[in-house]
Image 1 (cartoon, rainbow, N blue to C red):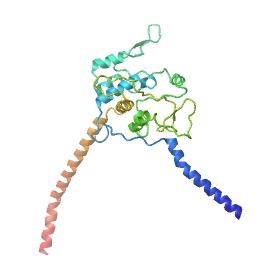
Image 2 (image 1 turned 180 degrees about the vertical axis):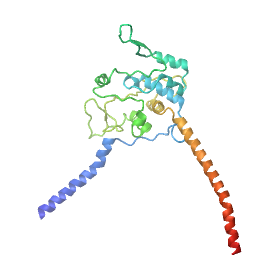
Image 3 (image 1 turned 90 degrees about the vertical axis):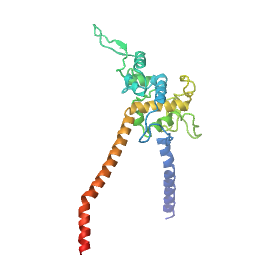
Image 4 (image 1 turned 135 degrees about the horizontal axis):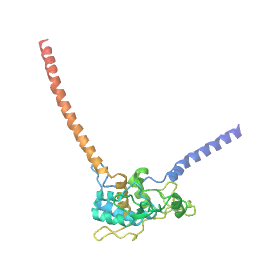
Length: 270
């Protein structure tokens, strides 16, 4: 009996230890809860901050596009964040895309046009992995929608590299500590550094925080280009339903008034 009691005590202690460690292990596996940022596009009246989105495109173009593609975004979509047609054509012409085969059937290249999608930085997935230590940089077209926490998560990840790593945690070779990434070990080195991008005169300083906010603004636009219109439609729908409800209520009062008046007359005669 004494041995059974000892065994049960040890089992209880082990279970308590496991249960106590489970939340911590789960937290490390899932990453921290993202920081909460007051984005301009949040809320029923939210819309995009166009100057910020333009700066975010600059950050993507000069930093992120070296590894990450935008497969579902075309140059002409830049018009929706305020770029004029002439500038869009000039930006597109900086890139080359596959053209029609020549007379001998060989592949050709041509300058990109506004109708073209942004060219991917790598020819295929194997080339992307070979250039990034085996890790595959995700396409950023819908990254804001594809990640739990959305814009807040992307911002937290981009600004989370300066966090101090716990003493009892070690990083595998080639990995970098970032507490907001699942498992806290990420293959991507800090992409945003002070001075890596130079904003135009009159724009905010290109700090890591500002660049992160701007590129998240741009990537949210890429993932949901119709977000402002959807918000406007939602508000208009709510106003319509409110007016309709008031009209239904007034109609009901008018329809049932004779019945109510007749009932009162009958009660008075009785």
